[in-house]
Image (cartoon, rainbow, N blue to C red):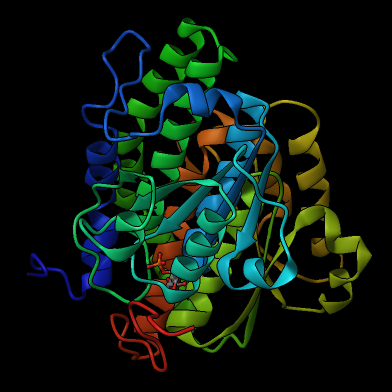
Amino acid sequence: KKDGFASFMEKEINDQPDAVAQTLLGRNDGNGNLTLDELRVDPEVLKTINKIIVLACGTSAYAGQVAKYAIEHWCRIPTEVELSHEFRYRDPIVDEKTLIVSISQSGETMDTLMAVRYAREQGAKTVSICNTNGSTIPRESDAVLYTHAGPEIAVASTKAFLAQITATYLLGLYLAQLRGNLFQGQIKDILAELAKTPAKIATVIANAGQIKDLAHSMAETRTVLFLGRHVGYPVAMEGALKLKELAYIHAEGFAAGELKHGPIALIEEGQAVIVVVPSPRGRDSLHAKVVSNIQEVRARGAKTIVIAEEGDESVREFAEHVFYIPETSTLLAPLLATVPLQIFALELATAKGYDVDQPRNLAKSVTVE
Ligand code: M6R
């Protein structure tokens, strides 16, 4: 069942090109028209929604955070992301013009199920993004958009995460198409770019030798910080979560801009900092800002490990280690940038001799509140 891999997690990381390709399959006609037939919410209703709330936990919530950047950019619909277990207890503002998008690999996470039930009672329309056919959350939602990542066995989520991000892109593009926020040509271009990501993910996996060696050399590390900005921020948090779950190492993901507001006090000689750098071809001064954050931590003695886009030479002089990922647009980059972080956590945990498929204290689906 592990197809010759040492663990389910390793297999599932290697399944990722296929997981993304399967999630994209059959959902556009090649001309920039999205066909989300399963999404049985009346298109007229979707045109009237004025707010999206994404509900999820753990890794699925980080997929939701990536979705926020994409959906707000493409659809101009205000989008909030909330941990399911926080949502219900704060008297949230939800009505029939709210679209709830729940994200759950298992479809059985009790916190998310209860949040979806609550939102539905308040009159919201609910769409579930889910990897498990026929599970409870999709059954209790108005509509479902299945991710087709295949069964995920390892407790730590990997391929489901990339498939969830892919599904939220499709949902965002569908809403943009329906509401006329993007031209058909723009949607077609983004879909064409998305169609190239499975091969690029395969390239990242094939070139992971260096990151594996680095992970093995860091088995004694006690704490790792992850920095990212824009969509790199949820990627950083996901990288930190993987390391906590698998290697039992203290890890924190920060928004890079937040460094000077506190976390930079943690930096001392030898502190490992992994930085997710946005594309230098992206908008605004995002790239320059992150590069200056690398300089700031480096100047204080940090061991800097950088994930950057192929050809980005500007990071070399401040990075002890650079791992390059193929070029893509800023919004789609999480599909690539996450992969080296998953491999890093897997290899570090392996170096420490831990069971990467069944980390201590964790269950694959959390069916209690
Ligand atoms: O099945 P779900 O996507 O609803 O699960 C949510 C979280 O419990 C899950 O992502 C958890 O954080 C994983 N262990 C992450 O690797």
